[in-house]
Image (cartoon, rainbow, N blue to C red; front, side, top):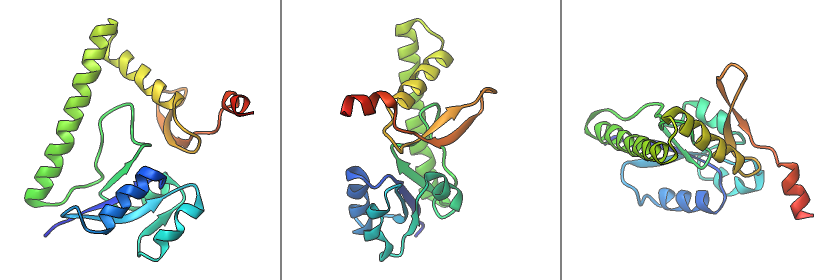
Length: 166
C-alpha cells in the first residue's frame, strides 16, 4: 500500500499535535518522515524517532524526503503544490483533494475581489501582503523582489512588536 510522506514545518503546539497522531499511526497511508523548527529544543524529542530533522523549512522542502509539507508557512499567494504524489488510486485521491482545496481558495479570492471591487490579481496580492504582515517571527514567508519573483525567507521580528513588548 502506498503512503504519503509528510513533513511538518513549525513544531509549536499545532505542529506537535499533528506529529503525535501521525507518529501513532492514526492516519492511514500517511507517514511522518521529517520535522522542522528554528528552535532546536523543539526538535530534541524527534531525533530518536528516526525522522529527518531540519532547522530550515527550505532545507526540508528541498531535501526530497517528503511528498507534502504542512505548516503555517505555506504559500499564501497561490495554490498549494505537491512535490509528488503516490501512484495509483490513492495518488488520484491526493490530487483530487488538493485540486478541491485550490478551487475553494480561488472561489474565496474571487468573492473577496468582487466585494472589494478589485481584480483577482490585486486581491491575491493584498491577501499575500496581509499574511506576510501577520507572520510570526521565524515563520517562513514568500517575499517578492523588485522583478516580481518570490523567494522564501524567514520573517524577522519587527521593531514595532519589540516596542509594544517593552
